[in-house]
Image 1 (cartoon, rainbow, N blue to C red):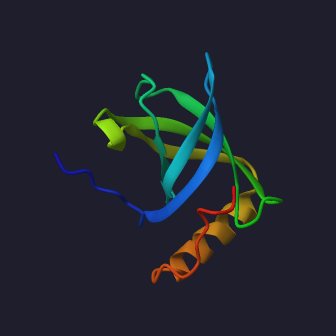
Image 2: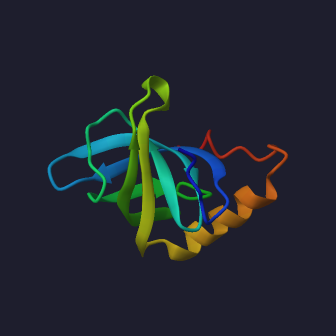
Length: 117
């Protein structure tokens, strides 16, 4: 089954703290979009669960805290993770927008955000 995404997914790799109702996890965000993000994990979380995800924007000083809802779960080895829909930006909404712009302008791969954080 092919998934359809409303928004362009932008490659991004950053470690993030994820607060779930029962556990705090340190996961990797591997892509973002205007409408959501993908978290790499094999943790058995369920569609419908919500998480607060905290990570740095274009600089370590720009903290972004997003409330997301798990939409789908993939359990396929290294590709395991959670497809999440953005519910709200609790902190850093302008930093999130700046990050989307920076990543969108970097389609050639010259600007690497993976090293920051």
